[in-house]
Length: 121
Image (cartoon, rainbow, N blue to C red):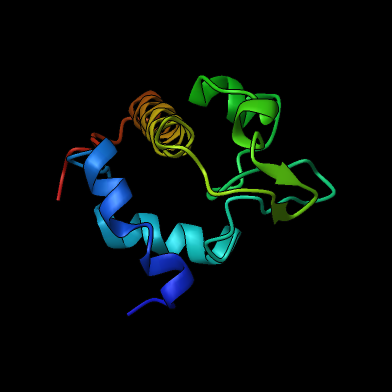
């Protein structure tokens, strides 16, 4: 369903985030749109990593830093393969960021009387 450069991250997502919020294909679609599967993807807005978290808000909410997402990078090119710890950083920080935005959406909807939970199907 996804290009090989994106699809290759599927087992890493499942290893580090056993129950990915939104489902694995949601994560891969986000990655496809944002970085195309390039862990060194980088933009003029300093969006970094596989999921293009932007400092300071996205990275803070994800519990990471721009530097932590770019340890194996020079510009938009990897200087070496990511270590298992660096892969975990990419996956776990995105998971934390998604949890944050789901909580914000739930709170904003509740404030206007719309009952909703990110846990709903």
